[in-house]
Amino acid sequence: MLVAPSILSADFGNLAQEVKAICDAGCDLVHVDVMDGHFVPNLTIGPVVVQSVARAATKGLDVHLMVENNTFFVNLFAPLNPEYISFHIEEEKHPHRLIQHIRSLGIKPALVLNPHTPPEAVEFLLSEVDMVLLMSVNPGFGGQSFIPSVLAKARRLRALCDIYNPKCLIEVDGGVNAKNVHDLKAAGVDIVVAGNYVFKHASYQEAIESLHI
Image 1 (cartoon, rainbow, N blue to C red):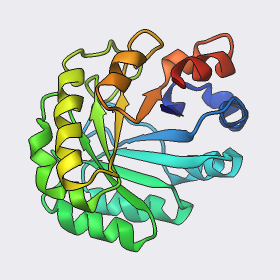
Image 2 (tube, rainbow, N blue to C red):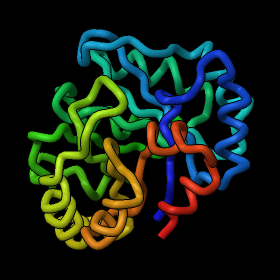
Image 3 (cartoon, one colour):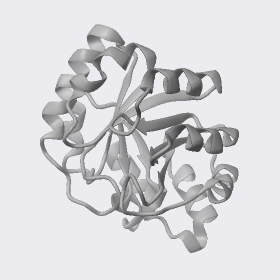
Image 4 (cartoon, rainbow, N blue to C red):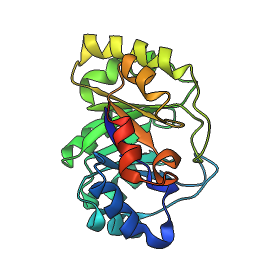
């Protein structure tokens, strides 16, 4: 299991040190939640802050867009050279076009599904992406409880990936901890996003190691 701590739960007064700390503690990606206050009822960070994150990080950035006007934000963050940019299928009218655009920028494209959105919604896009992110909480805020139905959803998505794109990774974001990570792995999940669980832990290394199963 790969681990991508979400900096949404970090101490923003010491953000560079926090990013360096999770990288030194063995994380695999640095998850960056970008919210615009429209698609979700919260406002987070722009490219100036993420540029500082990128300078401090020794692992790839996993940029998760929770926004309206996806193409605008893709172009805004692309110069920072993240490893992934993911966008919500619920918001995008032309997902195939945007996937191609992200890949043309040298970035791995990824799709995101809200808790209510079935995996079949992206069935005919799976061959075009590197990852699908399943939200296991309602997007917008950290610290929420894990929605158990994502386990069945992950199993269905894994079956679809096996048909269309076996190399496509499955990521889960929201309420992940050492208690449910084993169930997620059994459901076919490859990457977990963990914010509160890592950043509220006394030892970032111990928290990340407990998810590396």
